[in-house]
Image (cartoon, rainbow, N blue to C red; front, side, top):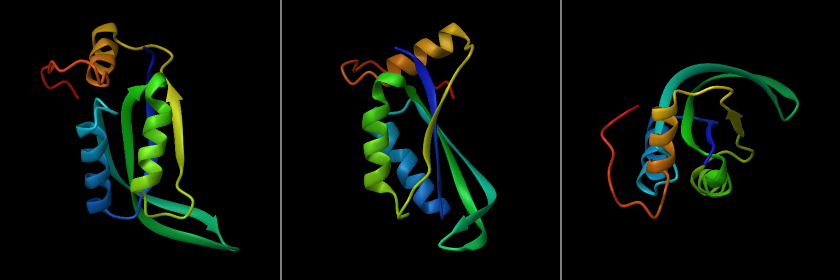
Length: 114
């Protein structure tokens, strides 16, 4: 399994927490990190400046289709930003933890490793 980070943005902390919780509970993500950001973007013919929350989801390339589908189902935006970033290099034990945590067939739990 190949570890990746999937990134999306949402409007509120509550939405970010609910989405992150759902992805981890469904074993689609090993972990999800939430940060507050300022976003400036063009939308429907105007420039918008709004606060958002960025969610960085640690998952695997093999789980990407399910992660994208879940984010689309849970997202409040008409056109959510959803994109994946490959890791050029990763600490091998951490990569193994991501793979194990996202394995729907693996009922064992790993120690907390964000």
